[in-house]
Image (cartoon, rainbow, N blue to C red):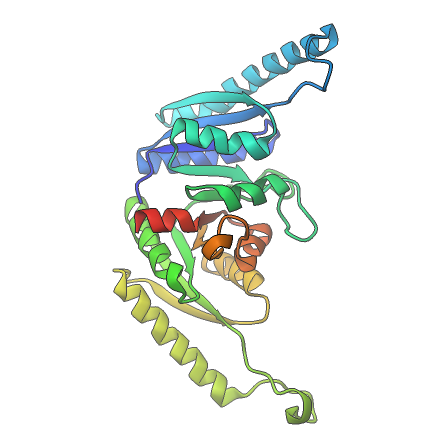
Length: 300
């Protein structure tokens, strides 16, 4: 995975400071440059030439330039090359336009205003679905006080066709960052239902579960070794809510990043994002790096 140019999306909110600090720290470790990107608002229909709008646009531009200078101070302090790009329009569309224009290798974006079902903003959901390059989503829920150090990457796998390609990218990224890797999979425990249910309501079948865990652990080790992750630590977790289980595991292990492929498949790959991936982006308290299927196919 070669990252030489990072598009960092900033909305000039207080979270922009933590997003920029995270992006500049990552760029410093990777030897990459940064483009800080901001989408200026469209004028209301019919008001494009009004004096009111011109005054607003001028004040907005002055505030944006001041904020950009403040954000650039941390980047300069790290010796990272950067520029600032502005396009007029909705972030839903201009982020992808900016990424293509600057030929970026990675998009970094905040998780945005939460959608009740997704847990992420609609702009993030669209970028995740349509981007042709990896997208790194930084949590922006709550107060902007968190910082993240990537000393270990959690790499979930479901052993599908995209998982192996995703693990290869994680291998290269971990090597570039000089950090460790933990691989993980989520197993849905079998349950006795209906006429097979036990009278006390217990759903576990200890012996079977023990064998399932061991089989999954061996499969993790084999897949990791197959892509050159010979020192990766395997973790098997159970539950019916894989996104939440993986998010909790990342915190437990002290991981500063979760990295996994998107799960859209076939002709729907650019429309549907895997539900576990999207949910994970919404609930994780650490940044999540998503590899689009198109990117995996192009690079591996």
